[in-house]
Structure formats: structure tokens, C-alpha cells
Amino acid sequence: MAGKLTTTSYVVLALVERMQPATAYDLKTLAHSTVFNFWALPHTVLYTETRKLAADGMLDADEESGGRRRRLFSLTTAGRDALNVWRSEPTSDFLELRDPGLLRLFAGGDPKVLAAAQLERHQAQLDDYRELAAALDDQNETGDGATGLRSVLAAGIAIEETYIQFWASIVKDGFAR
Image (cartoon, rainbow, N blue to C red):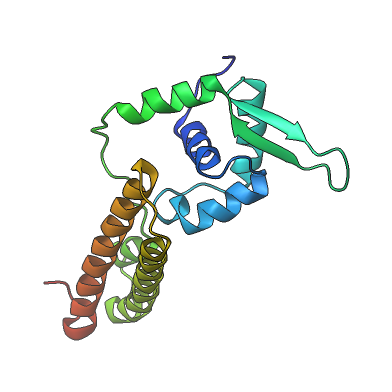
């Protein structure tokens, strides 16, 4: 392996594992409905990281012989082994929270104006998570990947419900209780 693997590397390896073989565009589509909901990355990173991981021997890259000559990525044994080691190690890292609504509230933004917009946004996100959870239940998937996705969705739903409660109290009282 030529380079050090980063958290972004592991995100890409996990996405490839779920969908392989996949183009970087396929990974971007999957990431938008899954990991981007709780881990912020510019989508362009998926294109550069897949090439880097292929150069490092973590991914196989097969280029189509005709048409758009897209590159299809799949995990190598080394990529699967690295991903397995990474995900088997528990983490005690603290949550990284980057919330523009809270930042504006901290900086003195009008609480009721912010709260109304945030309440609408968090309700929409909660609806999306519930829709994803229902679709996953309809697919009747089993295995560690499905269990992990269901668990992450449950966490997302709980977080959004908490945010809705928080912003609703600001709409009602002008401050959080």
C-alpha cells in the first residue's frame, strides 16, 4: 500500500463494498442516500479517492472498452482486509457536529426566524429517513450491512426527532427548554 488510508478512504471502501462493481458516479448516488446524511464529504472526493485507492491496490479498476469508458471499481483482497480491520476497531472519537442553524443561533441570529426554517428542514430530513427505513424494511435485507444501515437510520431518526423538539421549543418560547 503506497499511501495512508484516511476516514475518507474507508468511506469509499465501504461504499464500493456495498455496490461493487461501481463507478465513482454510482458511489456518489449511493452516498447521497446513505453516508452523506451523517458524514460530510464533497462528492468530488469520491472521484479522486477511488483513483488513489486503485493506485494503492485497495480497489480494482476495470475500464469499459467502449462508450464512455467508465471505470468500474471493486474491492481487492487488500481493500477488503483494510476495511475489515478498520471497522472491527471500536472508536471513542467524539461526534463532529457542524450545524449551520446552531452556529447562526450562537452568533446572535433571530431565534424564531432560524427556528422556523430549521424546524422545516429537520422535519423534511426526518421524513426522508423514515422513507429510507421503510424501503429497507420492504427489501427485507439481512446481514451486517443491512443491520448497520438500519441502526444508522434509527440514530438519524432519533437525532432529527430531538432537533425538531429543540427548534419547536424555540418557535414556541423564543428559547430552548
